[in-house]
Image 1 (spheres, rainbow, N blue to C red):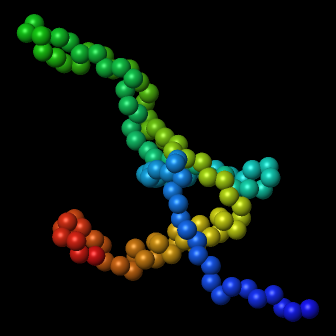
Image 2 (image 1 turned 60 degrees about the vertical axis):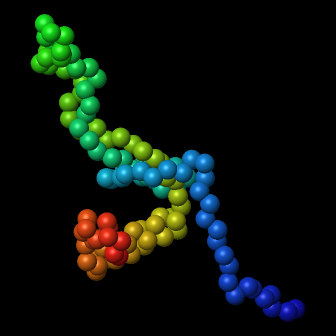
Length: 120
């Protein structure tokens, strides 16, 4: 029986889904699912926004000082996206992230002037 011949290369085409978006992440939370998958949600952090602010109206009709503010205290962690992956994908993601951190640590920082002038 002849040995199967495998191609010497393969191309992967990257196409953005209609749900693609860029998010800002300051952290992650998650864990293992009952089926031994890894679930991770990425979040950003910010101060809680007020739900209501009431201002006085001055006699000339302008907005005056703040009278009342209602809302949550503390920090909000806005969960942006959930990612479900197997152990192999998680290892590949971890390797990718660590390689990018290494590139950052080994390179010189790009200043605001560098990005404006087009220098890399």
